[in-house]
Amino acid sequence: MLSNVDVRCPYCGEWISLVVDESAGSQRYIEDCQVCCQPMVVAVEVDEDGSASVQVEREGG
Figure 1 (cartoon, helix red, strand yellow):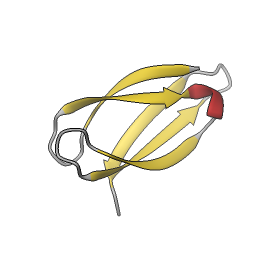
Figure 2: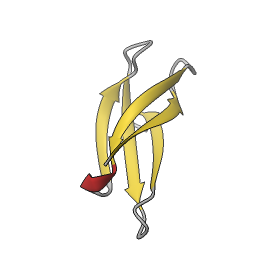
Figure 3: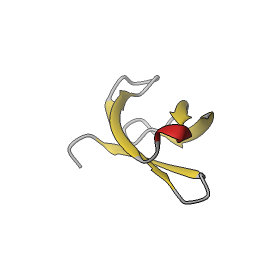
Figure 4: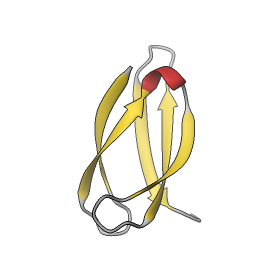
């Protein structure tokens, strides 16, 4: 199941839309910001109900 999630880039502060695959379960990966091209760590947590929460942070903490 794919869903669109709006997040704020931890570098430039702009809102961007990410496509998240909730059927893949919890995951962590790096994706570049669509505005400033900086690498963000995307953390997807899927709970028992199948609902996903997404957090982004700067690469390296």
